[in-house]
Each structure stands twice: as C-alpha cells, then as structure tokens.
Length: 288
Figure 1 (cartoon, one colour):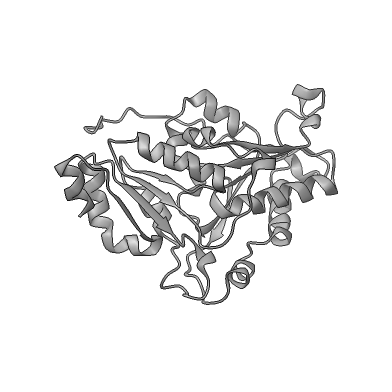
Figure 2: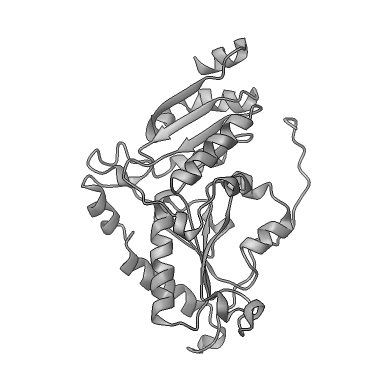
C-alpha cells in the first residue's frame, strides 16, 4: 500500500508495526529500495527486550536482514535525541526507504554522555570518553583507547555503564564509547572520519541485543545472540539470561583487553588491527 501511495505521488507514506513482523513485508520493503521510494518504516519492539511475547516476536535476525538490502538505511537510536535525528534523516531521504528501529522498554537519555541529534546523520560518533587524560593528545602515554565499546539503541546505556566501571577500577585506561545508530550512514562517511571514530590499534567490542552476524565488519569481539532465538520472560530477565548486564559485559570487555595485550603481558597496552582499513573494490551500482 505504501509503495503504491508513494508511486502515485503527493504524499509521503509511513508504515509501522513490530520489527519482527517486517519479515512478512520484506518483499515490499525490497521493492521500496529497488524503486527508490522514500518510505519511512517505523518499527518498534526491536529486540529480545520486548519480553514475554517470546521468540516468535523477538527479532534476532531482522536488523542484519535489513542492513543487507541495498539503498535502505536502518537507524537504531539510543535515546530521544537520536530518535529526533533519525526522523530528520528519514524525512530528508527521499530516494530510498528508511527503517527506524525503536525499543519497547524505557531507555534513559544519554544527553549527559553527549548524545546528538545532528550526529545521527554520521551513522556513528564518539559518545563519551573515559580516561581521555591518559591519551597522548592530552599529555598521557596512550596512542589509542584501551578498548572501544560500540553499541546501538538500548544497549548504548550498557556500554556507558561498562566504560564507567572499567575506568573506576583502573584510572590509567582510556575507554571510548561509540554510538552507531546506522551502519549504512557510517559506511558512507569519508574514510578519515571512520578512522577517527574507530581508532587503529584499539580492540573493539560491539554490543547489540540481536544476532552478531555482520558485526565483525566493525568489531573484533561482537557481543550478541550466538545462533539462537530469544526466550519468553520479562525483559530484564531476558537481558540477564543472555548476558546483557553491566557485570557480565564488564567481564567480557576484560577478556577482550587481555586477548589483545602483546605477548600476554598483563600490564601491556592492547593492540588490535584496524577493521576500517581494507582493500575496497569499485562497485557498479545502477541505483546511483
């Protein structure tokens, strides 16, 4: 229906339902992208956090399925500011569909951490730094963050909590938190910007309450659901069951740091290869 309305003209249609139910409409969404129709898909209940409705309603593969569609932009904002930015991107983007992926559960504002309406258009940006005084740019000795925590949507708050705990336990570290509302928009940024966000040398751990497929493009250690569906329980119970809690993620982050320490030396600063720099082949794209 939305495709037909957009094709007719004089109207900007939007479609809204649970994210998981977009699976029933995937053919139509693909037509939106192929036809360059600027339809806005507003999808809610976007993770295992929807709770008791269980695995039939909990999308674990849908985000990556949407990210794989050419000429489609997926946005998963972390708070109200990023939601505003997501709508701005969607309204300005008229040559392809935009999917805004929203949670069911309450999500605290990340304004104090630096969430931004404007930076959503960049796809990913540095939300907050802990221990920046330890960087060589501030007179310290570290050339890159000890670890970068990369998160989307409701899991950004967890990344901030983990970073805060890492720094409180060891004030000599440098921890960067990156919010990535849109992989597609980040991929479209100049390489220099991508390098400035995901700094060379830093081990990167991604956090998203969905499947991990696709995250190794950005993260050395993706944390998410490993080849499984969700479970039926209250959202906080489901999150804890799958390890989406600050205490568990703090342990996992420690494991990532330890893995990338040169020679296994406990006091060494971790070093990981850049995932941003790789051979890029020119693509023939009939849509552009």
